[in-house]
Image (cartoon, helix red, strand yellow):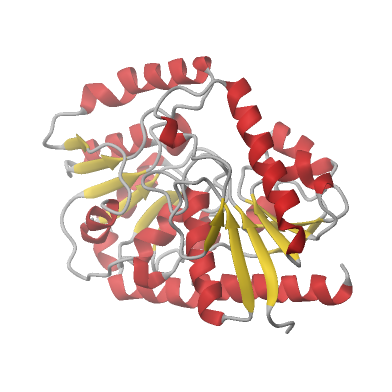
Amino acid sequence: MHSHFKLAHIAPIYSPVPPRGYGGVERVIDELIEAQQRIGMVHMRLYAPGDSSASVEIRSVMPSCRSLNRRVPPAEIADIKRRHYSFALTDAQDCDIIHAHGTWILPYAHLTQKPIVLTVYTDTSDPSVQEELRDVPAPVVLIANSRRTQEKFPEAPWRTVILEGVLPERYPYTSNKGAELLFVGEMVPKKGPHVAIQVAKTLGIPLVLIGRQRPQYQPDEIVRAREAYWQTEIAPHLDDSQVRYLGEMGEERLEYMRHAAAVLCPIRWEEPFGRVMAEAMACGTPVVAFRRGAAEEVIQNGVTGFVVDTFDEMVNAVRQIHEIRPEACREHVKQHLHMERVARDYLSIYSKLINSGY
């Protein structure tokens, strides 16, 4: 394997790395960098928002959109993205390879002659994402974060699939589970918090909801739709006893995750990976999810939780959750979803590209 090359990771501009609240891609980047540092052989730099604190040299031209603490209109976001990616790609000319996280970089890929490894974390069944991936410029090597991400748009010029992962030691394990169910995710219909509420109410089991209610960089019509969903489907059920909403959380979420009886993921969309599922299992907590997106790649059905098709099946799965052993959940993550495996897979790809001139 090629040793001691220079690598530039390029993060999105929305949240710091690591994120202090919501931020799945930013968490992936932070854990991947740590795993790659442990392996060695590569000198790394991170282009990310200025309020990032990852354990590597960070270069930046601005803070994250989140740190602005105000509504950020679409035109301003477009300008922020342009400045961020233009700076990163031109500044990284002394690096051997660039690893971009997310398709946002595509309009600016022409600014470098260096090979760009681009990990796709988005829903590739979305027509706008497919449009982006139809015409990928030459120096870009596309990696899917799950088989499902690749399968939903096989026409894209995929190089391979590298299933996402987590660093298990960042997720506190316990075999001592409480009685509460847990939902962690954005308060949007496609994530299904309203379904989690109905499951909990059907069973008479308490439920804790953790997640972001309203982002600050979405168009007005999306914000209005999310507010309407919250007021009709979520707020009427909150009673501070059976159904509690604790807001958005960063690392504090892990305390609830490790003690939950189960984490519910009643997803109603093509979730590209399902990071919450992997995090829960790393904590030794079983997951019950609908068979959408990459759920079957992440959960070992009947061993680390249950993958189900209907509401009634989800209710019955929760009734059987005591059959799942916490240590089996943790072991599955170590064996199949470990970020060190992800780090090695990427290092292998970087080496091949540098050695072959891609």
